[in-house]
Image 1 (cartoon, helix red, strand yellow):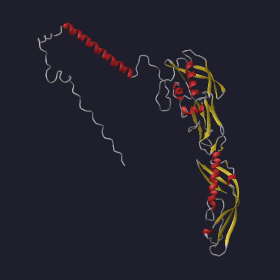
Image 2 (image 1 turned 180 degrees about the vertical axis):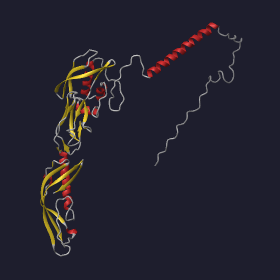
Image 3 (image 1 turned 60 degrees about the vertical axis):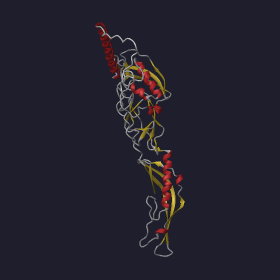
Image 4 (image 1 turned 45 degrees about the horizontal axis):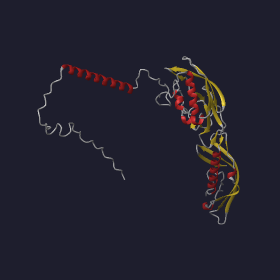
Length: 380
């Protein structure tokens, strides 16, 4: 049933009454002790009033100064603000403060390479002087965990103290292989940033035959931005394979990835054989002279009418679907396999008692159309 809708929160109780504790000033006047009446109070002299006024003014000024200080600090203003980064950590995100101080040019490069080695894309992005353009889908911690984490090591950056430095030389190892590179830097405030943090990679040749993924993330553009690292390439369609292809980005220079040979994956071969076996079994059960997509059928002679319920298709020889070896054809999205079989047709004549018709038809193979994860098999 419907859950009861929570009621409106109760309003807090009435205001408490301000005033002295009961019996002090309110109600009955306090009882005076026996004795002489108290001496009348004399007004404070002028000097005391002046002193109290000065103290009050000082307190007010102190309170005003405190309020101004709080407002200024809450608004993030200070006399010496730390420089913020001009690059957001990801597309559509706001800028954040740099993860590490980089007062020297070499500090920025060393921090960048260390961030890549630990898979820290957030820190690497914060060290950019300007936001990288193009597709930045792969500039994330999740991708770096597969592409660079543990693969960028032996970082060596010579100290550069020149406040006007524009480049820094560094060496490191990438997946066990030595790399030497020069990184362009620029000064932003009193901190250094990298002029470029990712390489532009053309993957259009890889995407010609099928959609691909880099480090487990689908590539939806022909040009992508990649950090230095090693990116495994896979076909998005699990029935296809591009082999053991990797994109290795050793520096920040633009590059073009080569093509890959597309083939059926082991999962794709199994899926095709499963679909072919199911289709063959379906074909043998059909009570028609020409089952659709089965590769066998008969033409009924003129004047002859068959008893539909007596139609039978049986395998006389061959038909071992599990032994077929499907391969991709030159036509995109199609696979083919050889499979020999002899199928026997039998049916009784509906007009002549005791007469029946029969025929043997030979099959030589089948085709499989791959539409994403869907497989459609046709025999011939």
